[in-house]
Image (tube, rainbow, N blue to C red):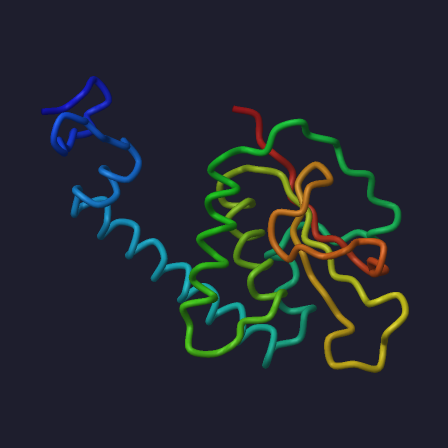
Length: 174
């Protein structure tokens, strides 16, 4: 038996329980394979981003992130609503990074999201910053992507970091 959304209902005694999201995700093998494939593609992009960060100077690939501007002088338009697809992609990137057998730092994760924002015509800003007080530790650098002042990936306490550069992509109308 299915409802108007196409989700199937499961009967347990006299109670009928159903959840469109859960049932669609678990009963549709094509959708499940699609999710696995999408996560695998994100994992490959994370590996590419890690290789770029590790072996190739930023000046050679920075253009792929958008236009570089000094972060302190870059006003961002304030959005009231973040696109659900954008939030979902940020979660997929975090999940793909978690599934890899090694640690994926913040910059490759931010790069993959910024590439996606640019490719899909959504605006965003990848910010590279340095810790304001602790510059001796190995984690004094941080990167995140924000949209309308909301951090999508690379969550941190902004007041603890001093932004150095921001790579911006502009949203396309439509």
